[in-house]
Length: 226
Length: 79
Image (cartoon, rainbow over all chains, first blue to last red; front, side, top):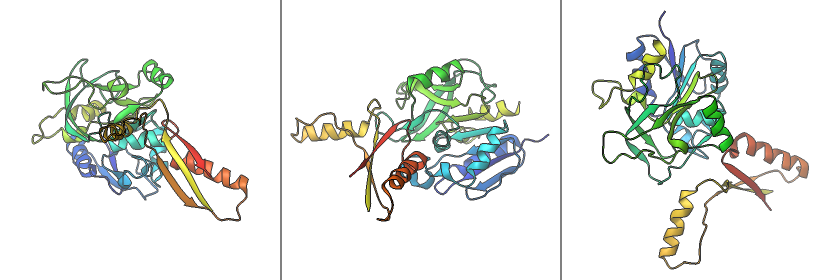
């Protein structure tokens, strides 16, 4: 059975096309592109909320997009135990919807970070099955608000439920920091309790093709398909 | 009537913009200024004939639904 997926585009999304190619190339299945004003979503295995600056990041990153018409359908899709992946701005949207815990605030050093970063998996879930423990992935980040914050109670919950999917780590470049943006416990990606929804700041769709510096982003889709 | 809503990051959350503003002000000689935090002010009009209860209810509802993320922010209605 072929793997079906969809990418939602909001005004200001700028990684939606990358996400479409990422899914087309790696899943070989049907990929839909859905405009945020649509009120229905085809039955698919995976939905991606892509990166970018939806609605200009006005008010808070992801705030306006989380109220878009399509979101009710996205929530239904997640409640049906199907996969939902929010990348960068998509992660911010997922926290604003409330499908994921916590919030993403300004990077600790106030700088927009557009560079390669290194992550490894923390707890196992269906998005990182094909990644070995302690395997370091090189995946780019491009964000201003990627500093993951939650209160201590929520952090304990995330740990106890094994919801932390990825954490930043030291990589092969001497100038890379262990925690690039100041996130609590260097969190780079979390899932919901059921582990069918993942939000992550790094961009796997910018690390899969031969012309990319790294192909480590493939592992996420390969995990889901396997 | 004009409504002003002050939204700011909760006290325990790092507010790096305030820190940078503080450094700049200190370097300009405003050395007495400390603990600077930057927030945002949202202004809007509501009809004058609206009751006080309805006003409070509408503003609270708008803050909870969109204007404020209560995981990281708190708000105060001014005046």
